[in-house]
Length: 453
Figure 1 (cartoon, rainbow, N blue to C red):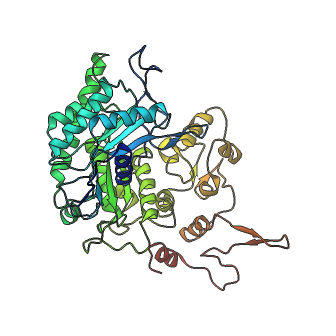
Figure 2 (cartoon, rainbow, N blue to C red; figure 1 turned 135 degrees about the horizontal axis):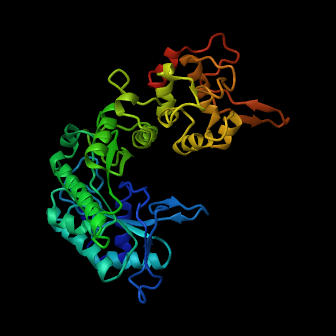
Figure 3 (cartoon, one colour; figure 1 turned 90 degrees about the vertical axis):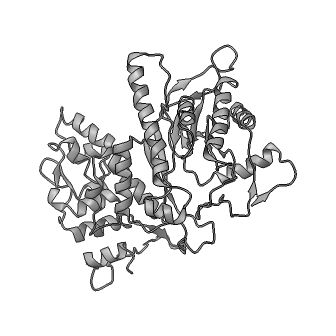
């Protein structure tokens, strides 16, 4: 463990602790709407938090809406094998004081760099000691510096429950990292942590949110507890869980703990440790992307984890998004007549999102919809056309075959290059059957999707 011998400036600390925080995922909107005054003198405070989004999101005019994302300290008493800040690593260490975090947040806000704060921390001495420092920071930021902007803070498992409760009345969102999908994985590569210590405060925050909502229904001015809800983060690829297990864990968290979001973080191998897998091809970013797509289906489209995957089909398809993959495996449910199907059925059609499905249901009250109408309503017809009919007819003559539809969906993006003679030349795709004797069958495609070739 490396500690800098000379006294560190705030700028030096900021450089170390912003870099140390980069593996904490925080790409989410706040879910909170609160406005302050412009100067903090003639009103209640400065800053604001808006529903449009805080963490690295973009407004309609392209403006980046960001937060200050830092660790309070990267000192840590734990030795998690995957963590760059583990105690056995030789890295520069730094710790802020509560006042330093407050001043940084206010100065960044006044320069229009940020609209909020994301604050996490390593474990300094013990969880309760560290959580007390985080509480002091938030308390001063809200009451001394009168900052009313968005604050997301990471709760520390094992800390005094009273501190978690007190912070909950100051923060807009709280999160507790599940770290790894299973208790076994946690035991193997994060031996200082256990699932019970993580789920305990998660349940406490859930109960606090429920109680706060009940009190607000009766008393308008009752204090709000974690108004933006709670979230968690899982590292994907550090242990050998299959996607089916991961989605089951996420589904359980949504149902049992009322989480707003589960974030998936592709494993980045920053430590040389024989207990960690080798990431030859780099972080599993495509897997992370597919899990986010499947997670979206769980939260907004009415899917269950066991519908998307099962023991015979335990991993998400790399060639098709999860909804397309489900649809081609359940062709008995298609085609869907868009002028009659209910909202639940429409949401299961690839190319039809929540907004476009809602628009379809409203629009067909006054007219019979055509494919041109669907395009105007936001339906992605290049994916949907294999699964829908309008007034009893498909858009084009389409073979309702898994083999055929998979080939069309995986070959839907045509790349065109132009030569010096002005002629266009089509870039051959992986499964092109131009100038070959036979097209690959569905077994070949599935093997390719599963990485067997």
